[in-house]
Length: 214
Ligand code: PRP
Image 1 (spheres, helix red, strand yellow):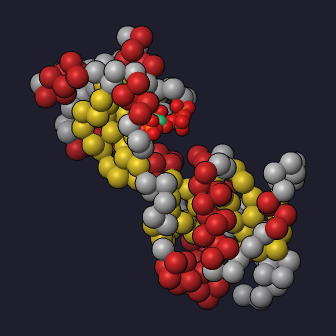
Image 2: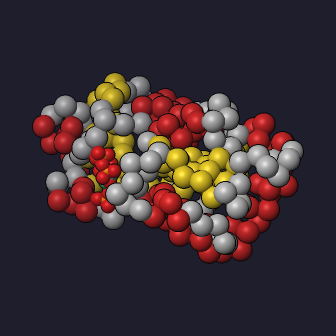
């Protein structure tokens, strides 16, 4: 396809986007407009390189990429597993490392071992369902929450949670612990399926450049 077409990147807001931009700088891709912290602009352009960047809520990044509104996205593996979009996952960027775990009070360990029908609170019902139903063959009651998941077992909403553990300090400070590990997580680069064909040269080059600085 012509060089004049913009390559559009959707980045998950927050730490992931900052780390992604640092990594892109290392391979010569910059976007000065994006460094202005006070800006209310939503989309940032590097005219010279024919690239556009925008920030989106993490769970929306795979959606933008699947529909081709963005050619490329950077998002956590947790979001990819939860959203189940038809996109290519092309690269593990190696940052944003953490784990998806089943957590709860130590007393919940025996409920897991005995395959009891427990209540599981989570922001990630697709991941939790796959883990309990397909991997463990355990029937559970899933309760979807939108944040501060650690609260659920403390106030008696659920027996355990399925949530992200990074340093483990949120768990420790709330008297909870990791009971089982579901899977490791990190930031991933994803690509729209049509873009991968139409812009193959540019995208493959980008992947190769990024691999060198990983
Ligand atoms: C995430 C996650 C845990 C916490 C884990 O929450 O859901 O609560 O970070 O980090 P730690 O192991 O280093 O303590 P986040 O801050 O993204 O907010 P949320 O609770 O609203 O999901």
